[in-house]
Image (cartoon, rainbow, N blue to C red; front, side, top):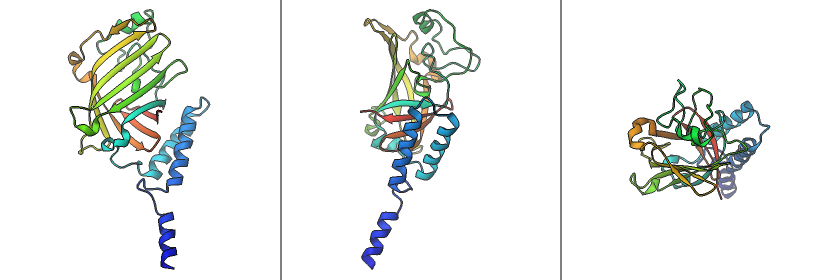
Length: 235
């Protein structure tokens, strides 16, 4: 009887995620499927996101300090509108851009986008014409080694934005970063560097990511501009 009771307890007990492993895996799969579908409504997906975060207790504890956060992540969905690749650091609420006026406009033919607040490529939606991959490396090796790197593939070439990153025990869900390198490389191999040194942009070149859920294959995070986004672990 004691052996049977122990077996039942072990099978029914919550995992370290705060929920049965099978339930978490099922919810992760549902979220990934909904986030990948063009027909999913925002309310439906956000209900599933909230359910996953609530039922799992956030998934892997202290995600920013866990080695599981490192690797390549494919951006599936965000709660914001389409990524404006001409303004990679984002647009201020008044419609101006942080030190990059003219550079991306020239690359894209000089067109003006709507004067609405926007987020950086790691916080913007992926359209059929774009794909965004975020790589996190070296957070477990100390503050001086951490890197967050973004690769945005566009019809005209690749945009890369790289940043130094830190994760601290005082904020175990947060990865803080400061951009220090950026360039656009055309399909013909021409590399166009970021026109303004990031150090001159000060706080506008800095940001953070708070991870609300971290699982084996899925991550749900929010950025310093208020965007919630869903990423799937890459191959």
